[in-house]
Image 1 (spheres, helix red, strand yellow):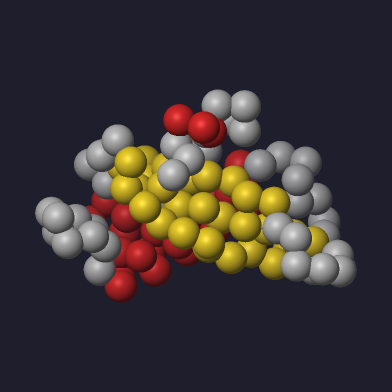
Image 2: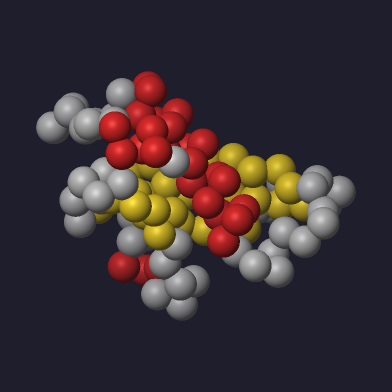
Length: 101
């Protein structure tokens, strides 16, 4: 997570590949660590569906499903990256409309 603090954003040009990979990786770990009861002892397949900027922060859409589930259906959690202070947050599922695209 310390590396997140050292990445600087290039204004108006979006994320670099390095930044996108870092935010994706950190948010997948953050969702797994901070979504109690959702992961348990099961293995999960996680993927990033989208990254976009909103309210001056980067929002990462992290999809997840149990490895043993059949089908292509993923649940999604939003991870908000604040590059200025190096913080990640997970909006409440009841309040994530503020951060949806």
